[in-house]
Amino acid sequence: MTKMHHPHTPPSSQDRAPTHAYQQTVEQTLAAQRSTMAGLSRAEVQARLQQHGPNALPAKKAQTRNGCVFWPILTMS
Image 1: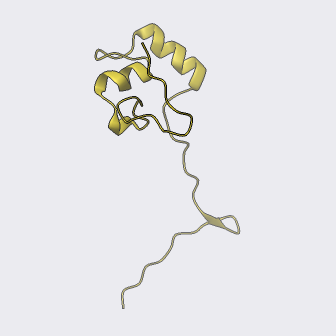
Image 2 (image 1 turned 45 degrees about the vertical axis):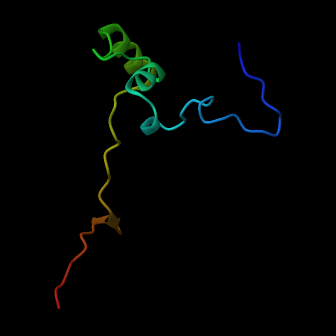
């Protein structure tokens, strides 16, 4: 049986699921990520790699000025 709330009364904290990962239990976080304590199966890894690509940040380009690599010079006074 579910509780009915008045439209202007927010649900109690017990009725709401945590919205931030740091507020969730390990089990809730794993379920949200469709994973387990043992990790992902090889098939799931391949499916996610195909869908999302590799888990890597793009390479950072060197800052240039007029086509030349610019390295800031730090001086000590």
